[in-house]
Image 1: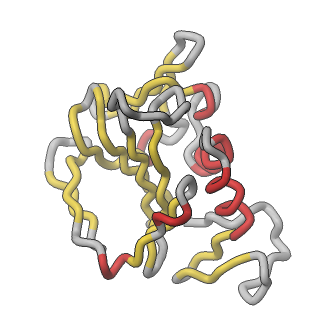
Image 2 (image 1 turned 45 degrees about the vertical axis):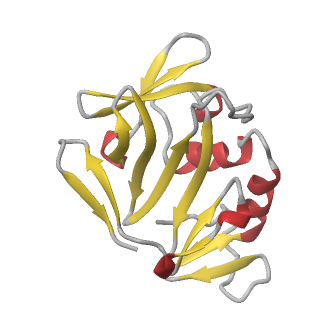
Length: 171
C-alpha cells in the first residue's frame, strides 16, 4: 500500500519518513493526524487512499455494512459507498454498528475502530476512535500515535469477511 505523500522526491533516508517494510510512511502525516482530536487529518488519508463515491470521510456520520458493501451515511442525510467497493474486506461487530472495519489497498490493511459508548468524548460524527495502518512490523495509529504497536506483540485477529466467513489477520 502506498501511504507516502504526493512528494515524489522523498527518499527512504530522508528525515521526513520512516521505512516500514516496503513502504515509506510520512512522519509528518502521522504527527499531524495524532495531534488532531477530531481526526480530520486522518480522514484526509482515508479520502486519498479509500475515497468515497461521493463526498468525504470528514462528513461521515455512520459506517454500516449493507449486502456485503460498506455504506456510509453523511451529515447531510445522503449515503454513499467506497469508490472501489473491493477495498472493504471485513468487519468486527454487527453489520449495523461495526466496532471495526478493515479496508485493504494494494496488500496493506487499514483498520477503522469505533467507540459508540456514552462515555466516548470523541467529537467525530461517526464515533471513529482510531485509524491504524498495517506496516511490516508495526500497526501505526494515525490518531493516537502512542498506540503504535509492534505487530509481533499482537495476537492474530479474526474479523468477519464481507461474505460472512472468517477473515484472519495475522500479526
